[in-house]
Amino acid sequence: MAERDPQAVFLKEIQARLERKVKDNEITLLEYWKEQVDRVAAMKPEGIAALQLQVRKISEMMANRIRILKRE
Image (cartoon, rainbow, N blue to C red; front, side, top):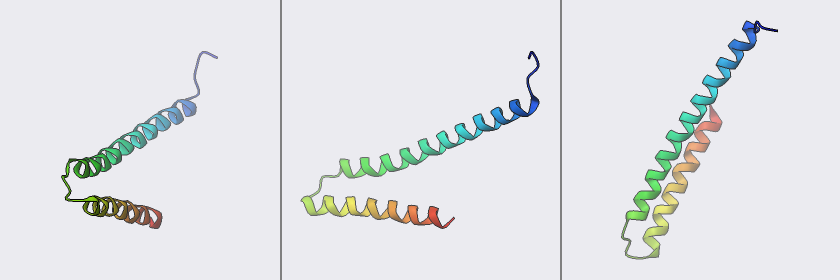
């Protein structure tokens, strides 16, 4: 068949756009959390307790975000 089904072409375009959007969102999300972890890595904590506190803070931020996303 030389002629392609217009509906199939449209669906392929929509799928490609959706995949691009999901990929862009994932990149943005990973960049944000990488920045958070990099901040902790750059710290010069006075002890393990300060480092644990920062890691817990990041974990709580992630948990809050997950809760928000599940509500939507």
